[in-house]
Structures are given as structure tokens and as C-alpha cells.
Length: 184
Image (cartoon, rainbow, N blue to C red; front, side):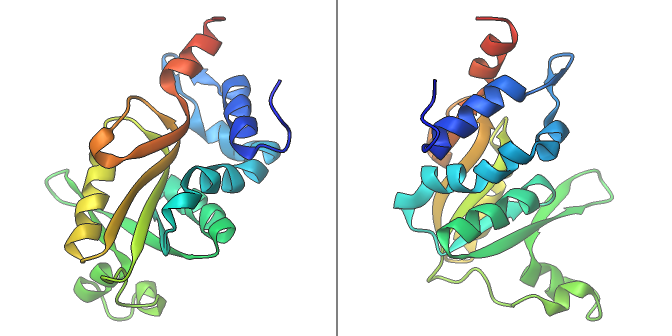
């Protein structure tokens, strides 16, 4: 039994108990329909990262846009949105809103977002639902450090393997979820 006052343990337990599967893939969209899990995710993910003292919590479109405000609110900091920009060759580039505004249409909605972030004074933490290969997190790390900000790592709901060079902390792992699914 998990301590009901420990959001990290509670969120990990809920993920193990309530994660659905489509074949061998996580059915992640179901997470967003669970009010108990949604309520605890902000405090749980913030709890994993509290000692890192971020000034911005980054979230990549689209699941990161759901999680980052939950964590940023708990930590009392702002959110840095990272947009995916599909390219003609099938590649996807990542950009902050400021970078997007600089290359996009001046009348686009991104014009309304605070420009110039992140800065060298920022300490940026990435949040995500699942870290599978670490490629997206590595791209965000590169974007953050290129801007001169400090990279604090990643907190995620689920990770597939420890990504030491990215400093990933997660509420649970794919191995734990698979064992629970398989009755182990």
C-alpha cells in the first residue's frame, strides 16, 4: 500500500494499476481521462524535480503541453513551450516560441508569447509523459544549452531505460508497467 500523502508513490501506483495497452504499446491517451491521476501528476512530477530548482519547465507539443503547466504551477515557475515543426523531408525540428516567431508570420499567435526565453539565467527542466529513446529530450537539451540556459534534465511519467546523460527521472518504468500487465 502506498502512502496517500506521497504524490510520487501514489502516481506510480496509479500508473501501474491503470495503464492500458494496445498490443505491446502504451495506451497513453487514457491517462488524460483519469481525474485522480491528473490531480496527482503535477505534485508527483514536481516532487521528483524540486531539488533541481528550475526557473522554467519545458514541455514539447503535445503531451508536454499538458504536463508542463501542472508541474510549473506546483514549482511556482513559468512554462517554456517547445513546438514541433514538421519539415518537407519528414524530419521534425524543435523550436521555442521565440525561435518560431522569428522565422514565422509576424501575425501568428506566437507573437503574443513572451520573447527571449530561455536566457542564460534560466534553469530548464523538461517534463514528458514517456521517454522512450531519449532523442526528443536530447534535442530539447541542445536547444536549451544553445540558448545559454542550464539544462536540469527530464522528469517523466514513464521511461524505457535510464538515460544518464540526459538525467531522466521517472515515476515508473516500462519494465514495471510490463511486469504489472503480465501479473508479475
